[in-house]
Image (tube, rainbow, N blue to C red; front, side):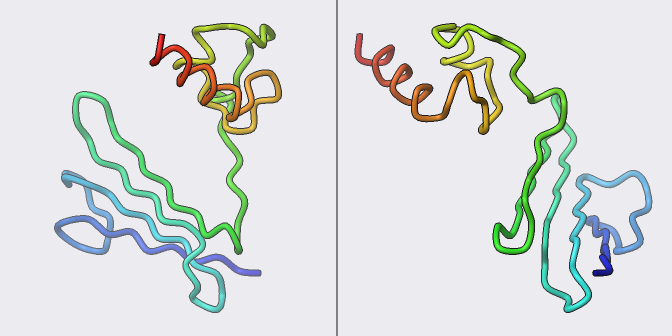
Length: 104
């Protein structure tokens, strides 16, 4: 399968510099959109990634992978663990802990 990319900004579709945002659309050879990445600068750069779950699988980068080994770690269960596939802090345990913490 071949992949294609289009880069758009508020000024043009060539991807030249000095833009308020950058949007990268990735399509397959049938021109189906596989992923859309939008980057908006600010005090902290905001990166939004949309994935077509039928056509692609999202693999989290190394900075998002949780390295904690304590399944009861309150910091990870509340905010630190951003790994949706974390085996130590599964999403359902994060949600349970956050609900319990909020209602205490």
